[in-house]
Length: 125
Image (cartoon, rainbow, N blue to C red; front, side):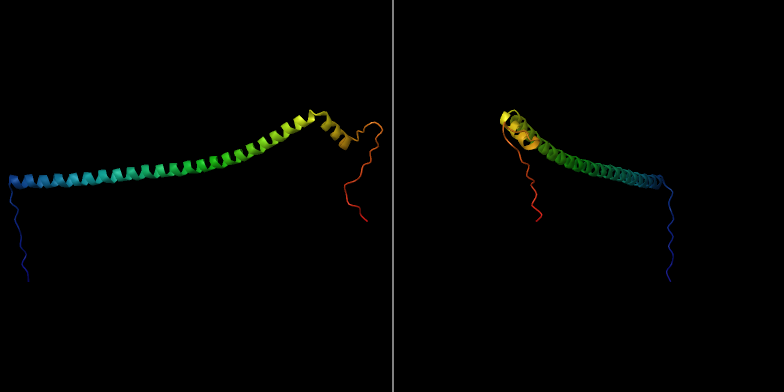
């Protein structure tokens, strides 16, 4: 069987100083670990909040982009409508065009002219 060896501790100022030094190093190490853990947690919080903010901003950008595209299409259709209205305005300033519309829609006739309205439908027979 093995014998237990016991070591007796010597009481000396050197040993007391060494133990105090070892204790200080242990506390420093513990504080360093705590600071690193706190810093890591802080960086995790900052990184996650920035990621969430980035995702939200991308969603807002996508919505604005879709709205912009819709407004561009609406603007194009309104520009087409404006061009048609300007063309119609120019045509309405011509007397011949106005008379043609009056003849076709309101049965306005020239002197001595008889108007017959023929339906545009196919005959049923």
